[in-house]
Image (cartoon, rainbow, N blue to C red; front, side, top):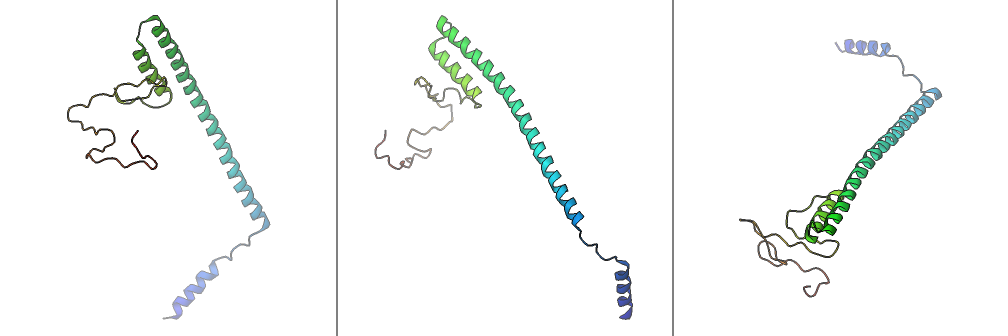
Length: 152
């Protein structure tokens, strides 16, 4: 019985052709294929970057144009006395934060205006826990900053 598997194995091996020798032309074809793939990826990258720049520049120009005209109109309204200085500052902060990509914070949260005026903090809602400055919500004092010997 052991002879049959050996004969079958010899039959299978005789039907398999020997591997083809790797030639110089095969190497050249491989290098050309890799170069074409790299060039294709570079072209795709340039196309994507160009498209992205065009899309983003239109968005920025639209937002900046609308924000600029909004700020001009707000200034005119403040100068004519149609809105107060506080209303002007609040609207200006909201418009500039939208242009900068951020959302304005919750209504009444303390923000530093560029002019140095502070917007008053809002009072906590019912059931809301607010820690006093320098303390966490458990009442424990916050860790001291390195180099800060006395509270400012």
